[in-house]
Length: 64
Image 1: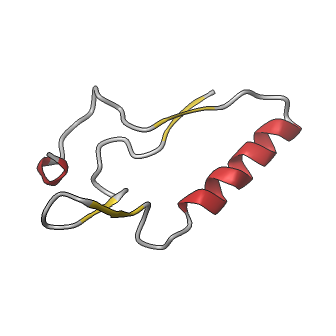
Image 2 (image 1 turned 120 degrees about the vertical axis):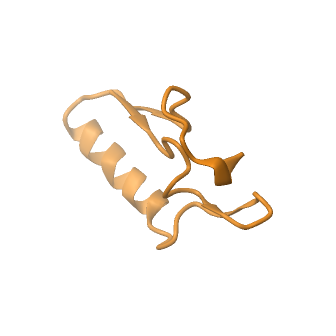
């Protein structure tokens, strides 16, 4: 299973006005949520591939 982590940068990661990444997400829950996702996938014998960006759907000028 493929899962995009940040898709287009609109919601994650947190990006400051200078364009630098300051956090994975605003609530600091990305990593625990990814771990839970992986644990569930392991229980179901599924392989997960996390992809950082979806290059086909890039509509966020603040991430440039």
